[in-house]
Length: 153
Image (cartoon, rainbow, N blue to C red; front, side, top):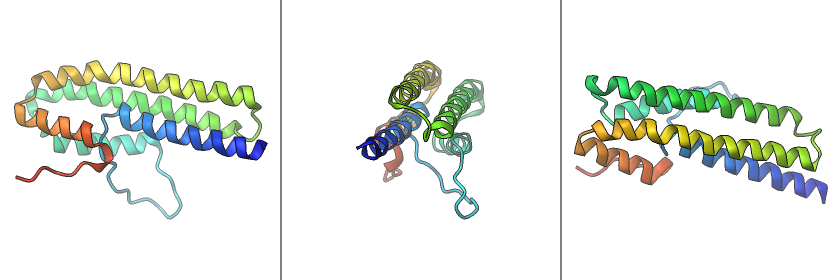
């Protein structure tokens, strides 16, 4: 029973983490990684690739760079916090009791919500300055998330 509960909690935590990370950085596709066999990139590493990918897909102009910088800084800050919470959870996952497990899970969920609250206004400011074509691309990025496919031209 405890093993099943642990598997469920670990699986649930991974699911929430995945959803949190996707939502917090703007529902963007995850680019491929040239990583060593078996090495898992950190969220910070994945976010750096997402930042570059989003910058390209959204065709950020020189005039928008200052607003984009705020967005990318929020993305980096959110990724660092999620990395720290995830690592702390993984460091103690085998020794946590049920209450500690729930509290750890709650910290991750709270961090996810806070990340979205920080990201939304930063992105809103950038979005307001975008052209209609950029807004359409941003809308598709957020709507489609990791399944984003370029529009047919």
